[in-house]
Every structure is written in structure tokens, then in C-alpha cells.
Image 1 (cartoon, one colour):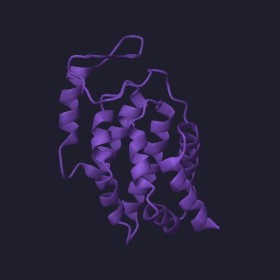
Image 2 (cartoon, rainbow, N blue to C red):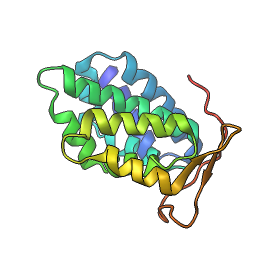
Image 3 (spheres, rainbow, N blue to C red):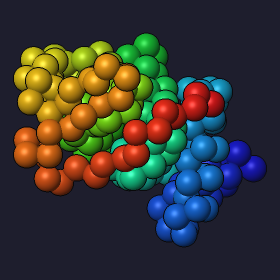
Length: 171
């Protein structure tokens, strides 16, 4: 039943109404943290990475955090398991790197930090995302004394979807 469940979850992530997709994302994120590497590779073969990447651009901090956790599990597998190196390329081809770069200007500090961490740890050897993000943060993102963030609308990426500043609970 395992492979058919994974295939169904990927289909739900890809085609279901928003609320159903969101719930499926939480399931996939939890599975990504607990499944053995063979099952994660199977989920990738079924096409889970593209929908996960799309969740990085939604207007929902909880969904973004779940997608980041699942992608981190896949990228960690690519870095630590023999025979899984291709997973990094699959994540890269899905457009996730561009979304991660955009998330560096996210008003939620946890999302910003997680996106930067993934870029530095898994994609930093190809581009210097860290120096680009530092320059971008000076122009776009300013932390206010109360701990919230202010975004300079003039220098913000016009294609970026802004999310509320509400703190995201850790699941």
C-alpha cells in the first residue's frame, strides 16, 4: 500500500483544492522526516518535489515552513546517502532555488533563516547567495525594535508574494 499512498499524496498535492493540498503538504512533510531513504526516493520519483517547491511561493507561512522541512529532508538525504546525490538536482530543477532566494526577503524570520540555511548548505557552491542576501536585506528587510520586520516596498521583488507577519508555530 505504501507506493500507492505516496502516488495519491503527490496527486493530491498537484490537483486538489487548496485546503486539501495544504493538508496533504503537512502529511508529506511529516513523512519526509520519518520515511526511510528508499521511500523518499520513491516519493521523488512520483513527482513530489515540484508541488513542494510551489508551496514556497504561497501566502501561508505554515505551508511554507512545511515545504521547507520536507525539502530539507530531501536535500539532507542527497548529501548523506550514497546513490541519492541526484535529489539535489531534482530540487534545483523544480525552481525551488529561485523560491528560496525570494524567501530571504520574507517577513517571517524563521522562514528567512530556513531558506538561507538551505541555500548556504546545499546550493552555496554554485552561487554566493549569502553575499547577495546580505545586500538584499540591507535594502529590503529591516528589523524593528519590537521584533517585527519592515519591508521597503520600493526595493522588494515585485514577483514576491508577501505573507502576514504572524509567527509560525513549530509543528
